[in-house]
Image (cartoon, rainbow, N blue to C red; front, side):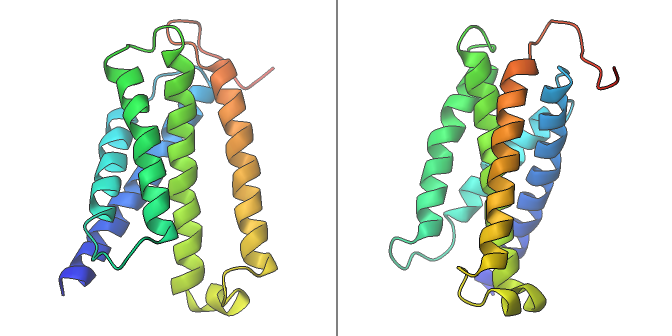
Length: 164
């Protein structure tokens, strides 16, 4: 029962983090500090915390991703709330926020292929082309968004418009 409840809570928090993260990254692209930032930071932190509350059965790729995300989350948090995005901390914050969104979406895709029957039928082992293609597209999109976000997000500068 504990694992079931934790799974529901963790999943809901993760989905909120993804939605808020998309809003934050879209803000980066238009050089606007998103009002979703605090929600994104809090739910991303809660996603990390709850991910380590599941029963431990030895080191797994999921634990490795969680550790990597903590190593990204801490300097991202510092850059935003302690360093005030000054100097090198602006790109650290933007790249870290974008990378954390990528990993949340990465896990969403993994879990979707594991738990949603039509997707699982397409990639039962998790290494078939539909799974690899979806992860590849996510990676390319995340890298493009990250590069554009670092280039465009300059707090205090004029907001960018997407129209010409």
